[in-house]
Image (cartoon, rainbow, N blue to C red; front, side):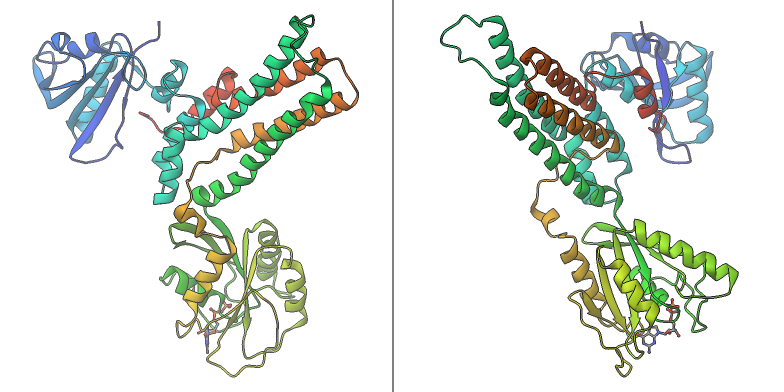
Length: 447
Ligand code: GDP
């Protein structure tokens, strides 16, 4: 039997109410020891006014929600106590519950129980965490689709297709004498295997969209000193976070900001001026900038409208050509001396706040952000799941090799079963204890 766990489910601080959650078979008996009323007689899914008492002393006036298994989040008896939000009273109630037999829950333990008791699968559990961490409406929709089981369905459908292949093979192995069953050859399996591979590749590709929604677009602003990188970042984030100055090379430290374009987050980093220099500190900045270019998902390369293109800038243009980039020609209020042709150019004046919207439009175009408006946001988003999907791709390759080597069909069946099992790991049908512990430990306390 699982022990009965308790945790403060709201964040601890002064607030109107705090919620203390208890889950386990002894929930009602333990809470009953510290309430004035007899709560054992209450019906499930009801709320009651009560007092928490320590011996004869009243600790707090509370509301008690009774939820009796199995129709609860953990599928166990759950009691939630709404206390007054003070830190002392909340902690005192928690202490009393522990004294009377509860164990303090580990982070994510309620959700872990929901999973272990079969109430939710692993993707849905990750959805719980994603809902809590969502910062935008779109990230929330994505997380809700995970929570509702829409994302799990993508995996369940795949597994269903595999079951069909396995069933076909089984019939052939078990009933070879039946005349109305066509003999299955390795080659007959190949189209179905290819179809599954295609589905998996699609899910992996779409997960890039999920990462844009969840984590934002990793963006760097590059350009030589004094072209207006910090001024542009300030315009975008609308606050004076970066120091704007006209001494070349003063933006030595890397400045970061978050910008939202139609609900999609851009994590922008303003790099130190990239140029050959003898200054040690700045040199650190330069190599860091080059590193950032490599890992960026979007590069905003700022040029000065009234200066000629330098050799370093030409080199940088070459370097970013294979990435998502936008060339921003700044200082359009000054006389033009720059001659450059490219399809990804936006002209702005950071000083006069001109052209910033065009830049935002260009970013929307480049990442096709409009599609998130109308599209159903159902993706497999966790790196854990994507990792497993990638593993299944190489297993599919093994099957294909086995088919071309004319391996016996029952050998191929074993390989296909391995793929089915592997996909089961994504929704948690097959799992390792350590993995489950590690996954749920990322949750916050009381969830
Ligand atoms: P960074 O070194 O690339 O970060 O450049 P800063 O943002 O520090 O700007 C360098 C200088 O250029 C400052 O004096 C800014 O006021 C000036 N500046 C920035 N944008 C513009 C612009 O659009 N027009 C003009 N004329 N000056 C600008």
